[in-house]
Length: 344
Image (cartoon, rainbow, N blue to C red):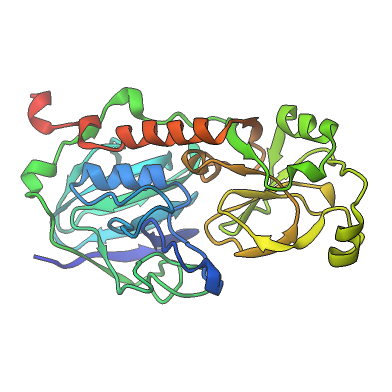
């Protein structure tokens, strides 16, 4: 049966309820919200027998909700026996004070304590639970939109005293316990990243030298990044001489354009300085030129970056991005899960 499953003893730095978000509402200014690292959330849901949802930003199935944990995690008291899986960043996950394996479905008993310690690798961990975290739907999703203060628990991060309910598991706890991800599929988090992008939609406004610099420089991830946008520190990117129509319609600043839509992953370059990858809480419209767009499959990499990490952007075609997405979807399946019975 569903019911109260966790009591929040400490909320952590920023722990929010997230599913894959609410696509389809950018026209009214509502960002998708949802997990910054959708791969880890979806895989965690698969491990505990939940619905993983459709590919990020595609369709209307956000999957079950879990907890997105930023750097310094929460402390949770288990109110009834269940099965959980922690995926994503290594934030020193512990059960009753002892380290437990990640990317594995683990049985937790009533009275146990789940906690997190020192961040070791990556930025965001995901705690998924059999049956999913129960929350009222807002525009078809349970995801917390932090800046808009909607979704999740009153649109905010977890706080001491919160009680989390979970739904009815699709499988018995005995069937779920012990499921683990194939070791070769577990992401490796370092301080150097390779992020694939499709150039555009306004790359034609930048000089050829600027595009080359954008694709060859090691950009430093900025500490001013958040769920709205991730900023990268590096050299200035130069624009071509400004067309008259842009001067007349958008102003003389070389980075300004007539406002247009911003895709999740779009990379704005205000004034040619510090490219900003707009993420799950980014605006729907903007007036800055976008040099490129991060492919869907690599948004999870952006979601795991820490301040000071180095990143190189690599251009791929739309067809290549589609192929990468299909390959990622193959991984996000039961075929990637090692069942308990196979390990005995």
